[in-house]
Length: 308
Image 1 (tube, one colour):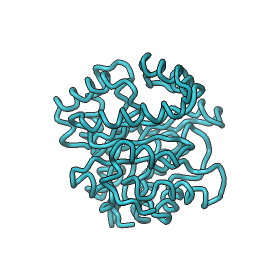
Image 2 (cartoon, helix red, strand yellow):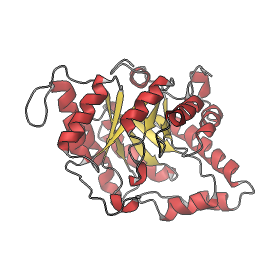
Image 3 (spheres, one colour):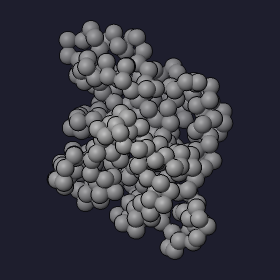
Image 4 (cartoon, one colour):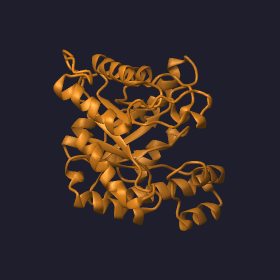
């Protein structure tokens, strides 16, 4: 890996519509689990997030998963959450990522432990997500820890953040992204986009603030593959809004998985035509093999040489 000069940065710098996806590390010490998922994505995405104990469930660490993904030919985006670490551990992890050549980091708060497999665990949250972005930017650009001590050489990676355009109160969401951009975020991945009108209103506010010129907006998308998954998204995941017309299409479909893929492709096609959208982040949990179909169906495969 070449720190700070990876494929995602190059794609963003070139103004290309970028595609990222996700790799969920295994609940076990099998390195081939990461390699198998990476094999499905290689050549179809610019980079893949390696999640950090997603859903507050214990998994292989994101740093280890990032190294395994890179070894398998997929550029990683190492996720790092505030949930499990204090500022000492967070900065140490960021330095380690730089030393090991991880080219991208995505910094977020993380799901509360109450939702995971250790609900009695103590959430740390020593820093919030905006503070963590600022910490990473200071560490990289100034070579300085929060304590004021210098770090030499400083780590180098592209800094990413997350945002949810659908979380109330809606009028504050663009301004919240502004705080992360001011702190140092260079790209942002959003929550699932099912409600395009709400997303487009948020994006108009983002453009009015000039944030799209300072930070690449990567819209979150993904296929709903079952009615059970639809119910989960509607009632168990905060901040996701599935419009009635989308839910009706899925409930009325003879093949829910196929309809979910069609909706995902249609959404990407519309997002490609939306000013201010710099790419899509495909969240296909447990269905990584569907990512090439989505990328090709949306007409994005022509921009990439499939390495498989």
